[in-house]
Image (tube, rainbow, N blue to C red; front, side, top):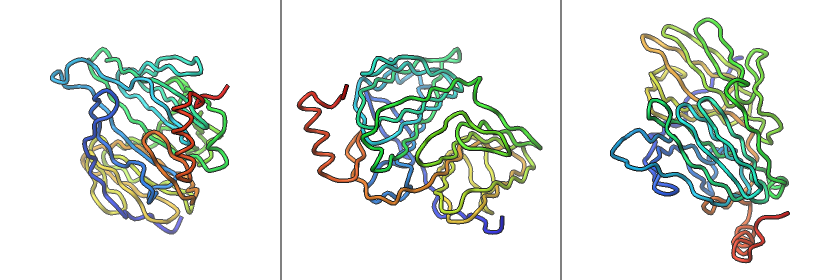
Length: 281
């Protein structure tokens, strides 16, 4: 490891309203500029203010051409879809859904014992040759997500490998790393990142020194090219999501819940929704 990845961009999450009035903190959203390739969107959701009133969620809606990753920290999300799948994503669980050629699904939040709901949703692009593939799920319970712990570093490994500990989510086109990383105070951590892969981190608790720059919660950080990341803590711990993946380097055309490669593919998608042919047998 000889080329440290330095910070190229610090993003302050912005409030967004989605679904049936769900308030989110959004760091990145799908854009044709595709600056975070293969990552398209990152939302931090919480329903912890009593003034918000009744819980709102994400009623039945379509997706095509992307993968959606839901990671719960507190509370739960009940989901069901047009293929007959249904289930509950609870604390520490992950759902990695490849929408492929098309799916309709619903996600409705439920408060945990503390009264809180807290988690993240990541969208990962699919390359052109997989955009019309068969939809599939990888549902991972908290108990099956391995934890790497050493010298004040604790990592829940959802996808990728940390020092021989491999996450349960596999066969994803972007070859991603997706990890929940915690560092105790007074730690210096070095971690290799494949060259050419996009690297972003989302600091959601505490503060740390990332490549020489102090970053406190809540912020998204994008890194330059290199072969490793270095994070240090001083008096406080830090907790962040680390996401890295191979860019596809293809043009994209985002339109709401769809991300395709051409405008014609978006128009075809909308036509199928109107015609009732969006969901394939």
